[in-house]
Image (cartoon, rainbow, N blue to C red; front, side, top):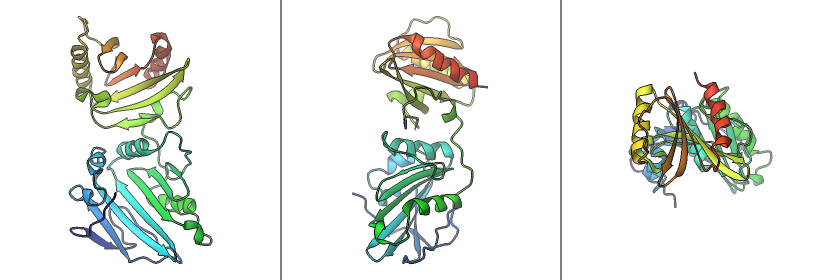
Length: 280
């Protein structure tokens, strides 16, 4: 259960510019005029038990504002994750695979009482109680207008756009910030799932700042898998991961591409070829 503690919080008057966020004045809605502001040190006071997860996605600050209108309530939480990849990453993990998305900010989804969206470095969560009681109020319209105040023309992180669109499963592109596939030496990665020949295949992309970092990662993976590979150079590797099964790797420059869940390497090779063709 989420708990909110006021001790140690920073409070700002509603509507003030604070860290790039300006909460609106809503006609007909009442507010106490304050914005709760949380940082890395006290985030746990707002999302007890989940703060470490948010911190792993580069969390920097959270601002919370709320309004009431007779029997209806509206709460807006704006999470600043520092950059678009981390913001998209936590949004992608919390989003259901069955969610129907729409262009709210960059992307968002909703049901009768909640609406979550991502735009730029912000992950926004809107919760409402009986919004239908407020005549003329639309949760989606409110979210679209509010998203515009956080930035214009948002774009997906470039690495997300590298995944081929054919046979891509909806809502399956996700960013994992640490220990991808349970392996600490792999660090962060972006993954996506594909339906091919009745099988579910996972593709992943690991991007690093230089070739040396990727070489070190490949050497550690070869050692971990106890593979008998004498010469390590850019190219393809087939490893037997004791926990993740057969893994097809492709090292190209400062990128490490890969695939798991396949029974025939020939099925995943064309997908890796498409990604490789888009890399600089």
